[in-house]
Length: 258
Ligand code: CIR
Image (tube, rainbow, N blue to C red; front, side, top):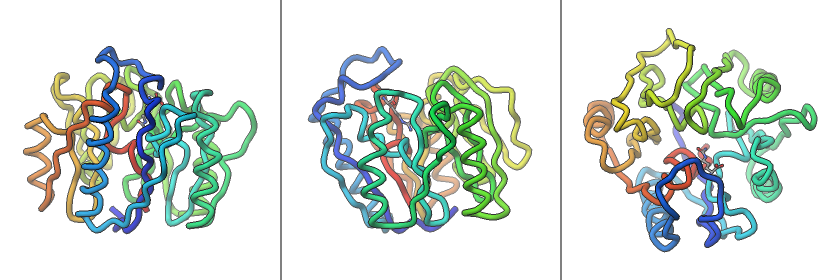
C-alpha cells in the first residue's frame, strides 16, 4: 500500500437527502452526517494525513462522495466520467482543485465512456475495476490506457458485477493480498493473487474498509471485520457511517487520497 500524506474531502451538502440511493434506510440526518464526516476527517489526520476540506456544494447532493469524480495513481489524477448523469458536473470543481495540486489528465474517449472512482480498487500493482451500472467497458479500457502511462507494469482487470453500486461497495482490500467481500456483490471473477474472505451477508456493508498507513478505518458495528482488522493493523478506527450508508456511501467514497 502507498504511504498516504494527503487527502481531499468535501463537507456533506444540506441537500444530501436529495442524492441518489438504492437503500431503503430513510433520509439522512444532515447534522449527524456532518458529525460523522468530522470524525472521518479527524481519523485521517490522526493517521498522518494532511486533509483539505472543500466547502459543501449544494448544487450536487452527492458531492461529499469525492472518490467518484477522480482516480489518483502515482501522484497523477485522472478525471472520470461518472455514469450517474446527475453527478457528472462534480468533475468540474474537482478538476479545478486537483490542478492546483498535481498533474491532471482526462479519461476522454467520448460521450459513451463511463467510469466512477468507486469502481476502482488499487491493490499495489493490480487494479480491479468494476463493470457496473456506473462504469462501462469503454471506461475501463480508457482507465487501463492511462494507468499504463502513469504506472508502467500495472495490470488492470475489469470485473463485471451486480448487486451493489460500485466494486468497492462490495469488495475492498484489507491488505493488497487479502480481499473482503460482501456476498451481495455478485461476480464471476476470482482473484488468484489474493485470499478472498466472504463476509456473512448481514455484515456485508463492512467489506468496505480503508487502510491508511499504519491504520485502517472500518465501519462501526461489525465485530468480525473489527477482529480481522486488528490482526493486520496497529490502529483500527471504527467510524459510524449510518447517514452515508443511507445514501449508498461507504468509507472509501468520502476521500481522495495520495
Ligand atoms: C451515488 O449513488 O452516486 C451516491 N449516492 C453514493 C456514491 C458512493 N460512492 C462510492 O461508493 N464511491
